[in-house]
Length: 298
Image 1 (cartoon, rainbow, N blue to C red):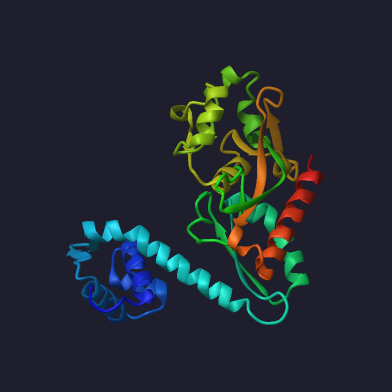
Image 2: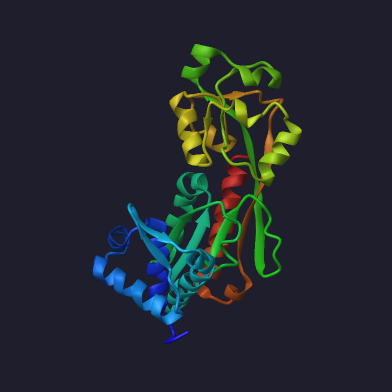
């Protein structure tokens, strides 16, 4: 290696990989195309590696770039975490806390909780990340995570906020046009909304309910928020938090006695943040707020 690379060059490097061009990366980062190009040139010289090749439709990462990408992501995440920690120093609870949760939780559940937190600590800033990734905390891409699985890593602190029930729901318009299945065996004959990519949780559900075959889903998306929107639009029958469905009088429970899944709701953060005032109050507020949410809809 030559000179030690600037941390900002790694951030630019990641953006060029994600966008596929210097101009698109510049727009996303608020920089000019020449500046982006200089960052990439400087990083290549510092590492003594060719990171991109120009193609007819943009910049393609080399094999070396793809191998470096996860390490660059760690550097970028660490730099962002450093800035969050630095912003918190001073009197009182202040600074930035990066919170990650699922799309539906971020949009439908957390806003009142975060609003109350903001009223109590007006110098506290929240970065809200809509994600279901379980490794956000270990990679320092977030400070606190709200998840539907118990984090098992020793480096994390986790508290259970309760359990969320999932059930099948459909809009009244769909029910009026197509009726509802009487048994799980009838479900494949209806318009089903489901996930696209399988994960451990979905495989577990399928082992219990074998009629939920992805090939029969009429709409497949890994976005739980998109699934909820499709249910509300009358597209078909899909899985939804029972507590959220209860807010909408137009949603009808389907196969209530035959399909019910309970998911534990956990709040987790890295143990290194235990003594951080900004993270401690946010962790406590999220845990208490989610416990209240679960209790109200039990």
